[in-house]
Length: 426
Image (tube, rainbow, N blue to C red):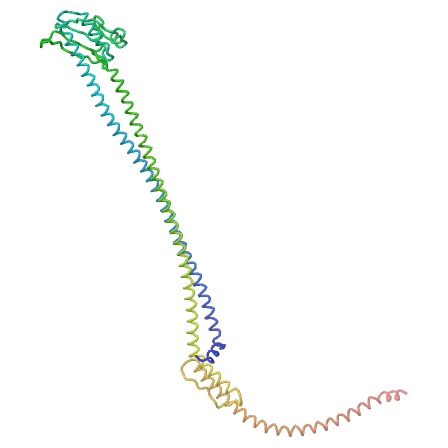
């Protein structure tokens, strides 16, 4: 395109409304596109942000549930571990306690059985001699032990040889009160046979394999039970202390694990929120970039459309319009040569307009020819009418002179009429 053609294209009043409409339509299109794109992008970003926020809230809720579940599980594990350990320690304590009690009882019983056998062996010659005082001394010697409540010697016929019981011992007095039978020794033996805290140890007196008597010795288990109870209490305190220490250790470890887990979950939540915020910001930036690119694309498309329309109209329509206009102005300017015609080829409206213009010029040419002929005849008639007019003017001038003379005469008559009337009255 040459600069002249571009200037003609820009200054064309015919194409100016088209360009203005295209520009306005392009601006409206760009504005609408920008508005729609902005709304769609904002809606998309808002939807994505809402979805991410909802996902973040769900993740936070899931983290909270997870923290609560982990904390509950840790507490449950701590409780179960403590209970299992306490049960195991209690079971072991019970077993150990039973073993210790059995061992203590066995040791005490073995010691008491040995003592009884010693007393039985020593008492053999005394029984042969029926030396009751010496047997009583042996009984008092055995009764001096804390665990021994009583001791009774019997002969080979089952008759009681000794009658001594320590009446100063509260335990013996209690047995005497609870027992039945004749004599203090029988009452004590009867009550001891029913008392679970008293064990009766029997030792046969067989100096040469033949039984000549028997020793029955009552052994109190209260001391052993007290010692076992004290031992059990110590075991219980040890187990309780161990369980408390274990519970404290588990609580401390569980609290530390829970705290670390809470911190990790909180950090994960913060990281998730930061990533969501970063994603939303990235979406905003991408949306702005997309909106800008689409806006530039819309503006470029409008410019390209305008250029294409200008190229199409300017390349096909405007040159023909200019040729038509130039041909018409060439006919109109100068001497208005009506023999010239507009030459356009084609089958569009401009060609029809050129043909119509040629017909119009031809019609004007015919009319001009007719007007010229009429003008010549009219000029001849005008010359004849001019001579007639000049004659008429001369006649009119003569008539005017005559009229002027008559008028003057009439004026003189009007001036003399009053005098005549005055004279006639006289």
